[in-house]
Length: 149
Image (cartoon, rainbow, N blue to C red; front, side, top):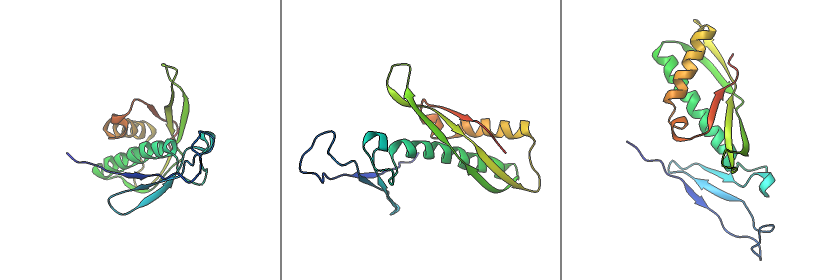
């Protein structure tokens, strides 16, 4: 149906290439022209000031859920004024003993204009968004909507 591309560029900036010394900074570029400075997570010798793949993964899951949720609201003629989420991904050993993002907790705070769905309806809409989210359908990680407001 569609293709989505990213260009990843890295270049060594140290004289030697050992695990403790090579740089982790790299650049992500996208066809639309935007780019992001990326690195390994700080606990893997990366820079905290750059986005790391684990953070990007959590953001992609949360963003897809939000966009799907907004589409559901629009189809139901529910007007959303704002949607803010503080998503957290948990890097831990999976059932095979490998490090993985095993769970992502979404904590959306949503402001509606006019009609506001009740808790049961809101939970059903989040379940629907999760089932339809392209990214959630692409991964094995459990994604949980922890709190909704």
